Image (cartoon, rainbow, N blue to C red; front, side):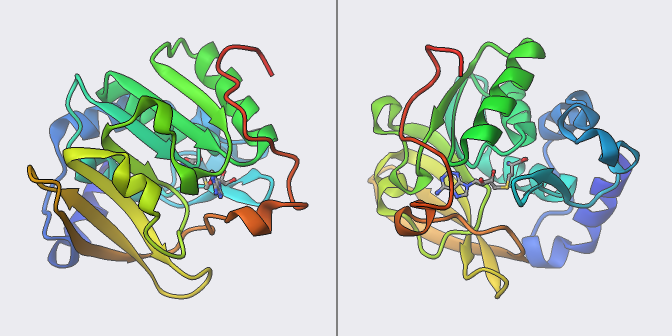
Length: 229
Ligand code: SAH
C-alpha cells in the first residue's frame, strides 16, 4: 500500500506540486492498520489503493488521498486538529499519530459510535468525539492548528474558517455531489487573511447539510465523549 501511495504521488506531481510526502506522514500511514477499519467482507481489499464501503452508504477514502490530505495539513506534534466526517475512523487514527489532540465530528450516530469503540479499543487516548453537523465545526476547542473535512462541502463553511488559528491550514473538498470537486487548501496567514489554493480534482461523498440530514439519519447534536454510546 505504501508503494502504491508513493507511485500515485509521482503520477499526480504536476497537479499537486508534490513529488513526495513528508516522511512522518508516510510513517503514520505505514503504522495504522487499515484492515482494522475495513468491514470483514472487504478484508481482501484493505491494502488496495482504492476507496471501500464502510456501511451507511459511506466510504473509507483511498489511502493515497488520506496521505495527501494529511501531508497538506503539515501537522506538528503539539498541534490540535479538527476532523469533519469520522466515518470508520481511519483518517482519525492517522491524525492521532501525528498531532497532540484530535477532535472528530460525525453526523451518523452508528458510524461515530463504532469508530469511537474501534479507536478506543486500539488504545488511542488523544481523540475526542462528537455527533453533529460538521458545517458548524466545534467552537468549544477552537482555534485549531489544522482542520480536515473528509466529505465534499457545497461551499467553504464560515464556521470552519473562523475556528482556524492564524497560520492554520484547512483541507477540504469543495463541489457538488457526483460533479467536479476540488480538493482545496485554505491557509490563514499571520494576520488572519485567508488564501485558498486548488490542489487536485477529487470525488468524495457529500458533506450533508442541516436540512438534508433532518429525517434521513438518526443523529443528534451531542458530544458523546463523556458517556459511552
Ligand atoms: N475519513 C472517513 C471518511 C468517511 S466518508 C474514513 O476514513 O472513513 C465521509 C463521512 O462524513 C461519512 O461518515 C459521513 O457520514 C460524514 N458526514 C457527512 N456529512 C457530515 C456532516 N455534515 N457533518 C459530519 N459528518 C458528516
